[in-house]
Length: 78
Image (cartoon, rainbow, N blue to C red; front, side, top):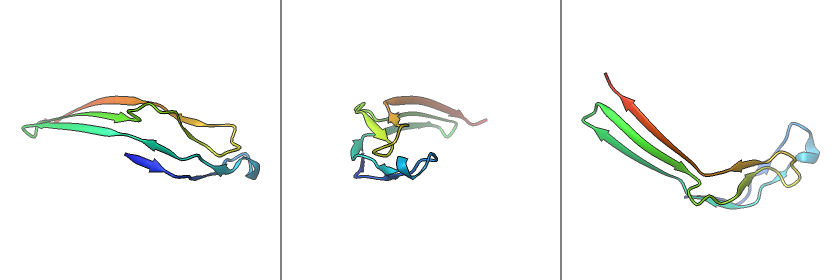
């Protein structure tokens, strides 16, 4: 679980686009399984509650919206 109270955001468009983000909480998780040291599988989830979390300054015109993401991964050792 991550909690962000606020963060300063700066934009390449100039100081008038700088500002602070709103606070937000995000829940992430990773489940990993190792099989005989030959294989590793993982399931990774970001923003599992799918809350609308925005990264960007208060007056920013370009917001990054952090949405729910789930990724499966497999690694094999030869």
